[in-house]
Image (cartoon, rainbow, N blue to C red; front, side):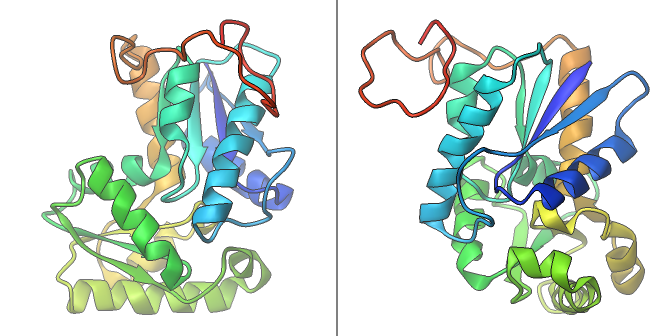
Amino acid sequence: MRILVANVNTTSSMTDAIAASARSVASLGTEIVGITPRFGPDSCEGNFESYLAALAVMDAVTSYPEPFDAVVQAGYGEHGREGLQELLDVPVVDITEAAASTAMYLGHRYSVVTTLDRAVPLIEDRLRLAGLDARCASVRASGLGVLELEADPERAVAAIVAEARRAVEVDRAEVICLGCGGMAELEERVAAATGVPVVDGVRAAVAVAEGLVRLGLSTSKVRTYAPPRPKVVVGWPFAVPAAV
């Protein structure tokens, strides 16, 4: 089984970290391929960057030259999952939705701890669109930008732990979701500081993707995610399947 794990930004070191986290939970025989878009922002922290990243990820995935069995979109609260589902016949798993749905098996209510405050509405909207918001206690911002997670890991851990504790103590969350692909591999430290289960979306998404492939399941094509209708698309900036 081969799973593409698509970073939504162009920072290759973050792609490497995300892929390493994905490999740590992948089953024997599952190949994890981390892919970095060829264009787009070096971090995604708002709607403009998110929409740009959606195009870039579709380009990166449809340009991949080898067969694959599933795709993990490794951006928290980002746009584009629906477009990938139209373009592909294999399962597409978004880390926002994978983390939240996993958290709901572990406690009554969950909270998300993310990066900047401006990312909070994007995550809230993604959870609402997916029907996962009813049991979300809160979405809290650590105040750190995406690239700061790599630049100063200890400061990042301290900020994430502080907000996770507030989510548990004030918002009554029973599970914490790490709200950024760049927070991969921080679960143990946040769990130790809060005493609650902590879900990393990348790892959760890999488990979901593997399960869907093993069950022989993929996206329904009868309506919402039917392939794009054949038509002339002017100025289409990237590779697309031949059928489009």
